Length: 308
Image (cartoon, rainbow, N blue to C red; front, side, top):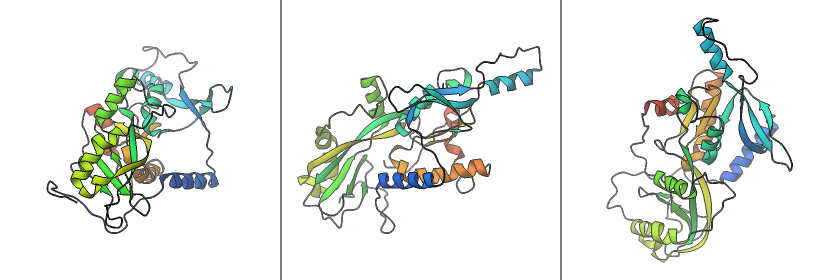
């Protein structure tokens, strides 16, 4: 492995590795069900608020403070509209106390359907989450020592890790903001899970393989044997997570923009948010700097030494 252009890096020798994210998600789901959590499968179509069927209070009839408070309460979200995943089902409202937008790559679409980015004042500030597609390639590299190759996260954006035991490796390129913008421009819409395009194997040989060989010359004989797509939520504002209440709707909590680090961060974020709402404050880790106020102020949250 070449390190001529490397200024700083890390190498973990203990407590490092990979895990099956689907098995982790399944285990969490089964545990939640055993604790009484109910899962409903359906498509999110919108929200309901307290202003439905109510008359707007007039300024002058009552004190200004009461009118402003009443107007704010009238637009407070008190439920969601869900279309169940069954044939012939119609959308139906579900009342709720808090809404967590943890839809990952489709969090931006959920926010739009809730009115974020379209209404006046602070509601005009959109949730800058865009769905982008990443292609993961499984390659066979017989010249790479299987027990000596670590998990590689390169500053060029490529990644590579061993796939089980042998000479097979999973590698690819982390999508960037420009990739997400290009995808939106070409499709003029958010990517949907059903829009599964064919694998472009030229992406590996043109964009991944040259950089991988430059870093690890032993990959020069690597050949692709399999590939699949995955989806990530890219924060077009500063590529950092968005965690916390909306600027107007305090019961509409955003948990998105994690990119490819969702499985690593999600459990810790869940613990922090549970502290936030049960103890009224972050206890273990303060995540306040990741809320939407930084977007309103135009203050970007950048990691100085983030490679991918």
